[in-house]
Image (cartoon, rainbow, N blue to C red):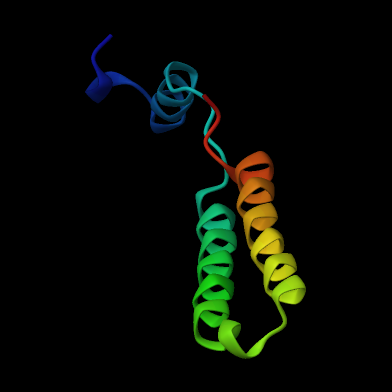
Length: 76
């Protein structure tokens, strides 16, 4: 059948069935933006921090990126 002859509900279901499962792009973007802001703040404030604290904050930012990928990233 041609897409023009299908009911709009059927067209939506057909389009979803052919597409691979996707993640949550808005949540993924928000989490990556937050991680980028943490890294930016670390670059600005980092020289005034103790080394251990700066490493911990950098590790937390990296952990946030990993968490974003696991929770909301694209499903391959």
